[in-house]
Image 1 (tube, rainbow, N blue to C red):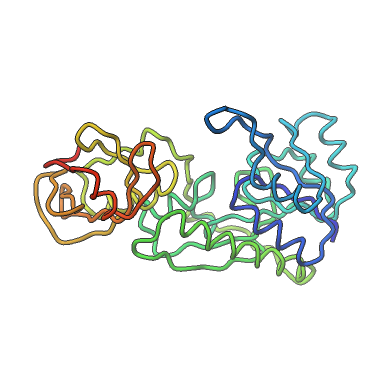
Image 2: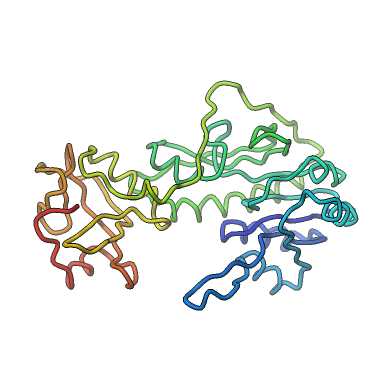
Length: 299
């Protein structure tokens, strides 16, 4: 098929590669414009742009798709279909209508649960037992379109967003190839009206650990915000990112250091398994402890 691909972050890259490997004609790759990054704040292309250019594919990164010019350029590609995954811009109706067979979205949740921007983070933070991938026909609403394919996967007890992100990305890549192969035979299934939840964008303000919460809630927050933006706390006046945790036996005052990297919560305790000091790489907890005195209590 003649495909327009629309995606921006790392999550989208395996999907683009899978479409190329399956032999589809990529008419153009749309992604977010390069953004300032690093110490020099130089414009850095997105992961999708980098991979598309390596593959020799034409790349476009308009700031908006709402202008008549952008919409005309999109329609002129005469695509059979558009595949959208974590693109980052709202698609106006003129864009949705331009490809002959519309636009398909790869969404990392079991819709209608966790519509919106951060479905992987929110599923882990909420303690969901399962999540998955939905291949959805796009319409004007936020992740409201009918579903063509869905597949579920269990969420590991201590799985982080980073780990689940990679598994779901691979699932999405496999499923979109399947969806395009079987498209004439797939029946769009409207999403049920019950069970709708919204995965709000992660606000950095919610990343600070509240040790008065119970151990399960704290561990879910740490794992759900790992690796980005990273849950954090004060340790002897230094901000430390906590990037992995599991619930363990233990009791004490909230924030008290019990043993090693085991910290008491409002109820129960957690063992930190991975952490990162400011200006340093993320490391296993035992390696962080070699150069850090945790003191008696976390803030």
